[in-house]
Every structure is written in structure tokens, then in C-alpha cells.
Image (cartoon, rainbow, N blue to C red; front, side, top):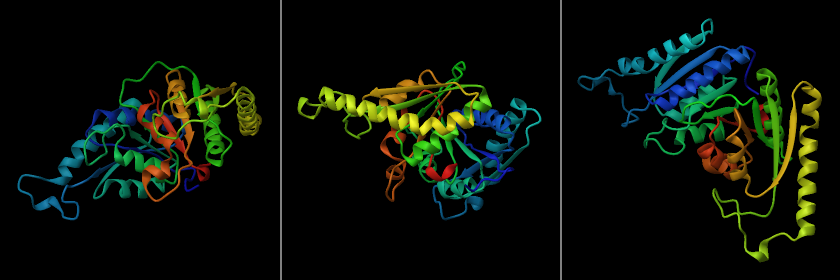
Length: 298
């Protein structure tokens, strides 16, 4: 893991309200983690390989300062005493933020914005950060915060990324005085982002196979959280085994959670493939902030 004890919580900001919601979450998290907060804005000039300094009536430094100065004031007002720095660069947004993330403890972005093609369901930069950053990434939804529930949900499937997610979720719960709801999902379903839950009869598991799948999911769940229970004895834990589509069930669980934590087990050379279908879907649809962990993140 690249982070050190002084590595900051990195908040990526732009001119959108979504990034300000993410900034608020990042400031609160920096206080909880006793980390400094670093605010960063990347100005992505449409003619990305040229410098707009010579454009009449436009000054890129003044434009960037109109983004980061209010963001810095907002963070200082929200968390008096928190060490806050703010900076900006001109260039390609995702590569620049990935460089900044290499020196961060955690990256926080909004679920909209930070995209050169406008506000998509999940900004393309947010997706790339979640797929490729060398530290955990939290994506904060573009909606008003909900009242705290005192619950963190983590998806567990026995994989290395899911074990990393469980370790991070338990540590986060201990910091907050929250409970962990660990969820394992079983069943034969398509891996598409919103696939039908009702499979053809020929593909459905019979009662015996269904019971075996549930038992195996429960075993993997218990094994995955056993070590974390020992390391965090003060954290209340609820283990849940459910049948269905993993992404939809986790999105449903996020409705009553302060945070949803998932591991990314995607593969391939593109951000979407690196992120994995379940992680990609919950990032776009969950009502709570979503933390994405890779196996090397803890």
C-alpha cells in the first residue's frame, strides 16, 4: 500500500454540487482518520494538448482558483482545525488524479461530474479512479446525505478483493462506532449490470443445489470475517446470506447503510473491465457512499 501515516485524504473537486457533497464527506473522513485533507482540481482544457493562457479574456489560474478557493473555505468551516491544502493542475483529469492518488490514503469523488462528456450516471473519471487508483476510492452519491444509520455494509464472496473490503469495512466501523452487515450472495445469475432475476426454469438451481450453494456462501462469509471479528472485537457483526443478483442486493442494502464497501475483482485493460460488473453497478446506483477496494489496498 502506497499510503504513509501522513498520507492525505484526497478530495477531487470541480464546479459541480456533486463534488461539494464529496468534499464534505472527505473532510469528515479526514477528521475520523486523523489525516490531512488535500483538495485537488484538474482543469481539462478541451484542446487538451495546448495551453489556453493566450485565449483573450480567459485566465486558467483565475478559473481554477474560483473552484478551489471556495472548496478550501468550505472544508475549513466544516472541520475547524483540520489541516487542509488545495492545488490544481491543467491536463488530463484521470491520469493527473491517479498520480495524486498514489500519495494518498484515500480518494473521494462525487458520482457525477469529473467527466469531459458531462454528468453521466458515474463520471468516467470516477470510474477510472475506482478501477485503477493505488488506494481505496470512495464515490459519494449526488443526493442529500441521509441521517446516519450506524451501519456499514460489505459484500463478501471469499475472494482476495472481498477480504480487503471486509478488513477496510471493519476498521471504518470501529472508527465510527458502527456495526458491520456482511452480505454474501449466491445463485446462478447473469453478470450483466441489471440482469433479470428470474432465470429460465432450465437454468434455476434445484432445492438440493440451492441449499448447497447457500451453505457454501455462508461458509465463505464466516471464514472471510472471522479474522476481522478477532481484530475488532468491539464491532457488532451481522452475517447475511441471500440469493439473487449481487449488484441489486447490495444496492438494496445500501439504502439503510452509511457506507457500502465492495472489492473489485475485474480484469482487463479497460477501466470498466478492471472495475468489475458488480462494483461498477453499485457505484452508479447505490444511495450511500461506496468504497471500492482492491486486494493490495490493505
